[in-house]
Image (cartoon, rainbow, N blue to C red; front, side, top):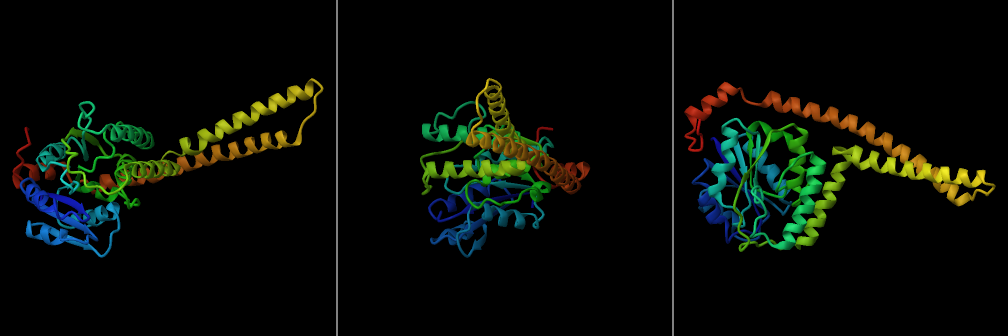
Length: 322
């Protein structure tokens, strides 16, 4: 198998059949992860020709993708494509996503609604929240991705071990970009189309956005410790030192020192100094961990000549212009 499409699904009996049938026109294998659905999602997916793996209960999108990645890693596929099953994504765009991988231009491809500018079909409240999440995720990952919350992506097989799948909910999209950046993967974006008239999400968009933002900020603790610890620590220390200089001036001019403000000044300096050194130490540890991840990805990458032979001989790649 060359391309496997992973479709995480939860109570998607209305759209899953058409999504599987449409995806099968562009991939070799469709894998549906039924994440504890209470409806006929699994039955309809199987009738449409997909392989189905069922979770006994709803465990979240992150766990569904983890199950899919583990299974895809064993079936001999060369590229994994992930897409939502509510009908928002168009399987006709799969060709755009996999082409950069087969052409050796990228390890991971992100489908973006905004690569050519703002998508006019995106509701305003979604776009405002999206901008906030994009900036937070890019700051954390050190990337310049225009659509960090896209679930329509393609991955070369050798990249699969890079992803942790710690987030069970929809914050998984940001987490995967952070993991990809830490592993040194080559990430490319291509434009995709998205429909909003079929949005069946039952989760409040504000609660969802705040949850993702909180997860991104929490991830900064290890991904960007200099920002998470050292920067606030430096600010606290500067405030404490400024207070100290002010108190010295008052004392020099004949004034007295008050216990409360003096204690607060000392606490600011001590806590700020501790946070600065904590951030520096964690940053060093993070760099060492990420270097090891990069080595694992490099060692598991296919030989370029073998990959070229697979592309030219074993797979009829209609998007290959070489």
